[in-house]
Length: 191
Image (tube, rainbow, N blue to C red; front, side, top):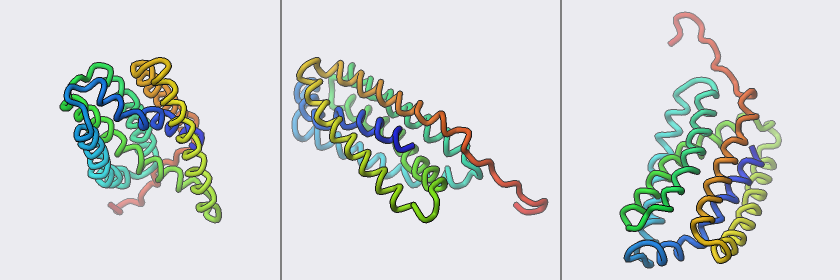
């Protein structure tokens, strides 16, 4: 799971540093206000959807629902940026940000729940510290590469790479599927 997180973070950070440049050069009327509203929509959407997403995942016993929510939301959130290839207006940009962030909201809590359940109790801090360190390093590499790729090959190539690498990171979850825990059977008469 740590490696998939690194690959995912690298894909996200490829585009983040050049997002404002993309908006200014490709979106009609794009400027600081459009960039700010776009970022606000992304952050608020993810924030508002995360708690209901986590509640849905917690309500269903076992980990298979968590796994499929994590996998499918990671996959969808990696495919939505491809729509940026066709976006020309602030409204279109905002819609892509909303869709991407709404799907991401289902990925974060399920990822964290699954990973936390499978960490040995005396290593929780160390494992999470390692995870955040390695994903930050991957993100830093992605940020540097994203700028270079945008300048050398253009935004379209960069967007396709972001989506392609993001999809690959979602499929890196598949090997952990057989580690998922089944729901415990309830005794008769216990709701």
